[in-house]
Length: 241
Image (cartoon, rainbow, N blue to C red; front, side, top):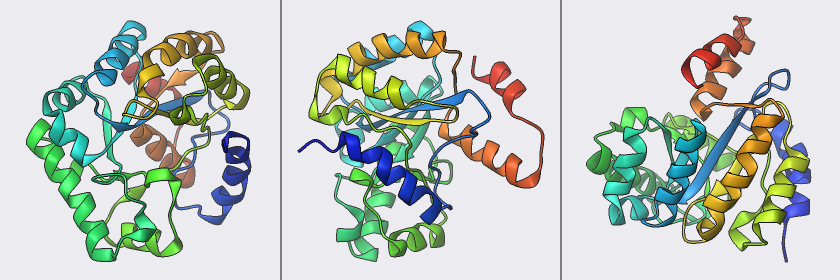
């Protein structure tokens, strides 16, 4: 059973229930984030990078440590391009099923893989997206205790079940709005279509006036809002365009 119709409902329920997660950006800004899970993949990720390069798009990647170890050169290529890197666990096990020790090990093992491939220090890889979006209050408490930042989503077109490029694009465009945090996949499940999906989707998002930022920028925008600071619009135009 496809869950795509339920994800917007999950989002509306979970976002206010767990406000310390990053669910989206600023509802008053046309800045959105494209994020990609489950990579890097030796075939699909390079295809995706060509599309992102073509449109000069800023994006974020949430990696599996096992995939980084299998494709370290691809990981380095992504990192060298300046994309934001986050953690998705070592081998896509659901976090609530892991003991605290195993969860910590999964995250640290993934950080180590990223460091070995990219020389990106663990202190700079602190964003975590739970596999399958599954977490509990205990999971979030542990992430906070270990100084990680939980990143969720607001638009989930369920591309990993491969409903077709047209369907994924339509679902995304129907849900996208100011501040959207969009989840797509460049890994073994869904990555087959990621180049075609982004090639179709990105021009339409640009035509609607959206600008693209990393999840780190969305975090910083949230801090600015909480602290009453100035808007990040000017910074995005300068740094991410």
